[in-house]
Length: 166
Image 1 (cartoon, rainbow, N blue to C red):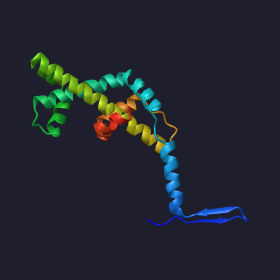
Image 2 (cartoon, rainbow, N blue to C red; image 1 turned 90 degrees about the vertical axis):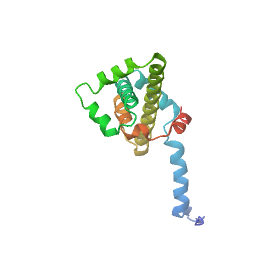
Image 3 (cartoon, helix red, strand yellow; image 1 turned 180 degrees about the vertical axis):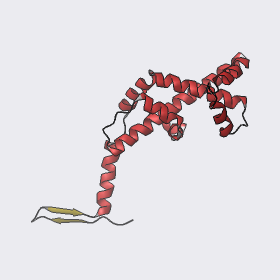
Image 4 (cartoon, rainbow, N blue to C red; image 1 turned 60 degrees about the vertical axis):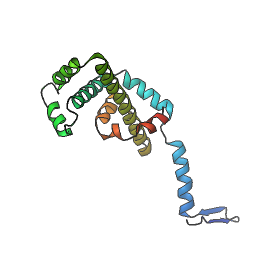
């Protein structure tokens, strides 16, 4: 590791630091200032959970979990094909859920709800972090979070990491 050099010329009031020292100090300041804090995340998640977008995403996850349960060995391409049907696979997923014993259906619905919350939370955190890092004057909306949760952003933060930011 390079050693930081600092040159002080008292007669001119000039302080010069090498790039490594300046860069490390700037990273520390940016890290402290530009992280989305719990109040931001809490407020956004409150709006997300009250939105129609959250309900729609929850239905998407319920279908996806039910279809995955129905055909556990099916590849994503098969599930994507089923979801391309006019109803998005809703009838097939609903039929599967209705055919399950009550306790299995409840477990499946609980798993879908947990995945829904985890993915929405991860997507909200990822979007807030991106907006803060880029210093964009953009408000993250519930619809943005729901769409991001469908993509890889919803899976971008491991469940253990997401729990630490609540």
